[in-house]
Image (cartoon, rainbow, N blue to C red; front, side):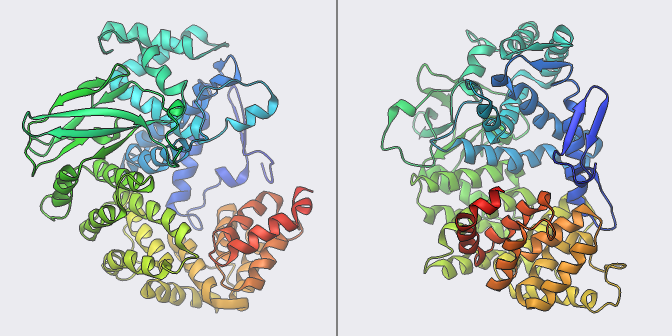
Length: 549
C-alpha cells in the first residue's frame, strides 16, 4: 500500500503492508533494511497465532500479543538467517531499551488497568514490547525452550478462535512445567511471573563477597535511574533466577538458574574465589536485572578485560552486560564514573560489535547531557582516544566485509567516528560523495555503497552548505524508493547551517514538500543535530497549532 496511514493491516491469512516497511531493493537499501524488513514480516506472521487465533480478552493483556511476538520475531529471523545472530542482538535492541524505559520512576507494570480508549494508546510502548519480550526470554531460559513451545501449543489449541488472558497462559505452561520438573520448589509460575508483569520496574542485585567463607550474599532493590529520595513505597520485590560463574572455573554456556533470589530475603551462594578472582552473575543476560559489584570484583573483571589473551574468556554478551551494568550504576551515582571509564578503556582491544554498541550507546546518553557544557570537547576527546585507533584499523571505509556481524561492527565504528569528529572519517566520506554530486545523471547511477549512504550523506551535508543541500533535496524528490528517501531526509538534518535546518522544519508542515508520513523523521533529524535542537524546540512551541493541523 502506497502512502498508507498505518504500516500494516493483519487478518486471517491476509497481510497488507505499507510500501516503506516491506520494500527491499538491494541496489539502494542496505543490509540493515533487509534485517528490519525480515523482523517486521516475522512479527506480523506471529500475530496469526498470538493475536488472531488467540486474542487477549482485555487490553490489559496486550503483552500476550506484542511482548511474545516481539520476542519470537528474533527467533524466526535467526532460524532463517543464523549468521545474523539475532538472539545476541536482542541485548541492545530490546534489553537495553527496556532497562532504560523501565528504570524511570514513572514506569508502569506490563499489566495495568485500562479504563479509557486513551489508555490503550499508552500501552503500545517500550514496557509492553521491550520489557515484555525480555520477560518472555527469561521465562524461556528458566523453563526451557521445549517447555515454552509445548505450553504455547497447548494454549493456542485450547483457546483457538477465542480469547484468553495471562492466567490462562500460566495454566497451560504450568501443566507442562510440572511434568518436566522445571519450576523451583514451593513456587508456581504465576507467583514468579506476577512479580515481573504486575509490578513496575526491575531490580539491581548487590553482590557482597565473603572471601574467608568462600561465599557471596545477594540482595535486591529496585533500580531507579532517578533518585526518589528514599521512597521505599516504590521498592517492589521480584523473584529472580540466579545464574553465575567465576574466573576460577568460567562457564558461559549454562545460563539455567542455579538458585532463586526471592522476596523471602537475601540469598547466600557458594563463591570459591580469592580477591584476585571474579564472580559474574546473569550468564548471557538470562534474566532482567542489573548487578552492582564491590570494588575488588570490579578490579578482577577489569584485569581480565584489559588483557588481549584473557578478555575473550568472558562471552560477548557478558562483556556487554558488564558495560551496561557499570554505566547504569554510574548513572544513579552508586559507582563513580572514573571507575566506569577505566574499565571501558579495554575497548581498545575489543573486536566484537555488541560490546562496542553497548558502550557507544551509553556514552551517547552522556554526550546528549554534555553537549552544551564547557567540558563537552574534553568528553569528545576522551571517546576519540579509544575510538579513533580502532577506526583507523579499518583503512578504506568502502572495504566493508560482507558477513552481517562484521558489517555491523565496521559501520558502527565508521558512524560513531564521524559523530565524534574523527577527521579521517569525514574526509573519506566527502571524497566518496563528491564524484556522485558531479555526475550528469545522479538519479540513474549512485556509486555510493548502500551500506555507507547514511554516513556519507550526513558527512557531506555537514560541510557542503546549500549546494549539497539542494542536490540532496532533488534526489529526495526524484527517488521512488522509500528506504532511500528516508536515508536522504535523515541526512539533510546533518547540515550545520541554521537557515537550512529552519527550512526543513518549515517543510515538515508543508505536505507539498515533505509527505506527511515522512514529516516526523524530518523533524527528528533536526532535533538530533547539536545545532538544530533549540531550533526544533522553538519551532514546536511557536508553531504548535500549525503542526496539529
